[in-house]
Image (cartoon, rainbow, N blue to C red; front, side, top):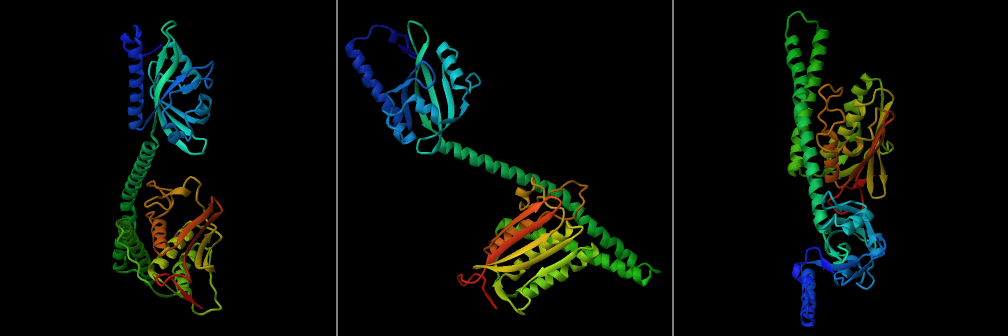
Length: 409
């Protein structure tokens, strides 16, 4: 018997002394392999894949698979394998086909990465590297000499790097789309401001026309300011320089301000806008960052009204255990399933082409999510295309430490 890689002198007559020395060297080689975090093994083929026998398996197999060398069988090993990634194109994925090619001599060096599930339920990636043991009489392989390496940590690192690259690539793509879109977003209100400012000052304009022009200028100015504010805020959020400034806030008054802000837009679209609050209480005071809470509600309402063309938009809050839970619901166009995992990403817009129908930077939900998390809460939503969406978020309520929101009824 010889390995495919063994030198010719191993085919010559070996004295008993030489054989003993060779065995000692083999033991030392196994120790050297295990010292390098490998698990050496010898496999003798059986009548089929899984029928073979492992011999001279390193003690590291216990740590690798949770199995002692005596219990480690080829059948058990084959049952653990969940995925095979061949190391070269000439190595098949199918173990039976691989074994046939090894026996025939078509594969002289075997290398593959295997995903295995140990009897204890742990999943690991291992690298299996082996060479055939050749029968001198038949010239065919009768087994393998190989080494197992645990590469789980290496694979995990590669996976994390891949995910990080995907996130960076997606972020760059979204930022590029945003930068391509932002000139249009800025130019539209700016053109309106410049154009109608000129018309207001032209002689002969009726008072009603002047009032309409002034209203357009005001609306465009507000929209332009919102765009600039969003860009500034998302820059601060990404730079992690946002600070929380807690003050006492009248919750019902805040909801009234939000309602007043969007009532004209809702009336113009002929949709119902209403809010739900404990109106039997004139004052519900909480301690939180009022600006960030207001902007979070403002951004959610802005989307709800923007994407609703019939029906209603509702918002409000309730007390749930130690949290205050807010909601914004609408009967608008809803969010497609393919877009739902991404809507809180900065710069993401379901419709990002230059011919998109809806104005906006795609930053509102990202800013709202960042603000809510800074306030110690979380945000979630449900949506069905064509039927509308419901966004919910909470912030800490009573029963928490002093730097968390409290309320008095």
